[in-house]
Image 1 (spheres, rainbow, N blue to C red):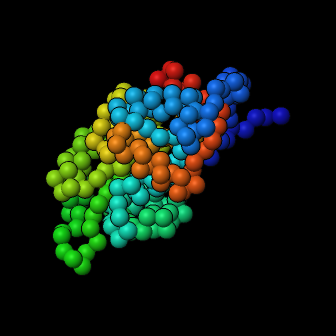
Image 2: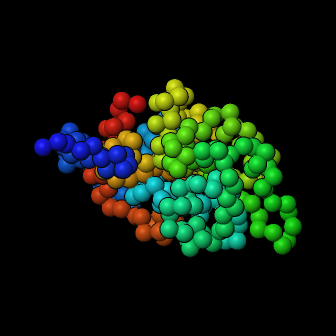
Length: 249
C-alpha cells in the first residue's frame, strides 16, 4: 500500500515518540498561579529566542494574535493589515467581536506591504475618523505562499509606525521558517515589534500551543486578557514540555 504525504498544512504533524515521552514526564504546577515550572522555562526560552523581555504561553496562534490586538488597541480603533492576512481571513471575525476594532486591508505583493502604503493609510487626527493604533504584519505570509518579509521592509514600516505613534504586532506563526531560510535570527525579525506571536504547532511540530513575546510590563495585562478569553490553563506543563524542540535552535 502506497503511503500518502499530507501537504495540506504543517499543522498535521504529529508528536514523535520522544516528544510524547518528554510530555508524559513533564514537571507541572498550576500555570494560572504562575507555578508550572515547565511553562515558565518555555516562556523564558521563547523570550530569549525572540530577543524580548518576557513571553506568555497560550493555547493557539489565533489567541496570541487576538490578545495582542486587544492589548494594543481600544474599541473603535483601526488596525492596518495586508489584505490576505491570516488575522483577517482565518480568525473568525475575532478582531471585531473581541476587541471592537475595524481592519483596513491594503493590497500587498504576495503578502508584503511597502512602507509608503502604510504611511498613506494611517489616519489623520480628525474626530470623525477611526484612529490608527496598530499595524500587523505576517512572517512568513501564509496566503502569500510562505513569503518571507524582507527585514529592511519591516524596518521601514516600523519607522513609519514609530513616527506616527502606532504600535506594531507580528503574526510570526512561522517566524522560525523565515529565519531558517534566510539565515536571519528570529530576534532580528522580532525587534521592531511591540508584540510577536509564534506557533509551536506549525513548523516546530509540537501538538498544541503558541507564544506571545513582548515587554515584561505588558505580561500581567496579557495574562488577564488570556483569562478573559478563556485561555487560562492549569497543569499546562504537559503541553509546554514539547519545548525541547527549541534545544536545536
